[in-house]
Length: 388
Image (tube, rainbow, N blue to C red; front, side, top):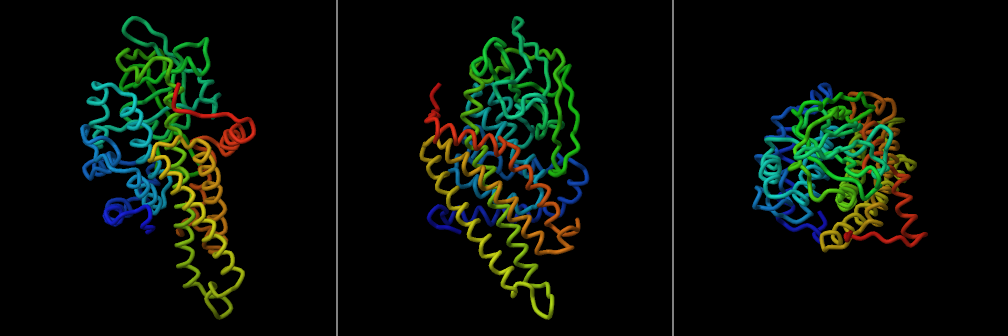
């Protein structure tokens, strides 16, 4: 790998993590795709190996490592060729545990973060609503303070781990008269009365329990408020950078893995008396794809280095998410074409990759939202900051 960013320790971690995935995950992926969910045992195995706490503090069971370990984590997860598996396993530390670590108080960290790092409990982040889409400040789920509790009513949809997680970090309106300044985060335990969830039937990401969640007069202890009341929008925006960088990594990594598989196939498949990787039209197409993948990868690496150094890279992360997810769609479509009829068969890897990659331009903020963020910065001169 590129020694400019990755040390020998990083490379050793990559190999050990790849070996773990090949042993514990690869043989089970097809069954999990059929099941539409992951077993709790795989979360516990990830926790036992320390994979959920790579960049989280040692005080809570994490390893306190640099962000490049999470880059390797994201890149290697893609090689399992299951967007649903990757989403469910990654959402837990990337979204739920990140918010708990950043905004949680000591009691919340001991109750949710510590067992979360161990893989003993699983969390999800519930933002999107049936009528809200990417407009976070337009959430309608309400949380009304009644003494030492909040009464929560509303619904969420398209929530990864939305059915089987142990707790939900829910974005709620605590001040209906305000927009962004009336949003808070609540930790809602799954077993509370009035919480229900329904799995969704999706085009791809079949191994993930993506669900719609309903809250019907759910009584949530006030002590489950995450961070300060009415500051939830700020917290969400602050962590969108890491989510979008993770999706960008997934984009170029999926394109890269599709090309790797296609190179193997074109070296074996023969037509008209020779291997198809000898046909100029395919060779040039491969050269073009490889060049675009490498350009995108290096762009993302440079952003991650800046992000690790403390820069708030909203524009660059939005650009990376936009281009890398588009790249995955384009490359996987072209690679599927090179497989010919076999690319359309479920027994070959490109069919699943084709379905799963499509969500990249929708989840974590659509491509249209990414374009609008970029346009506001470069056309309107809007500035984004970590300060409230």
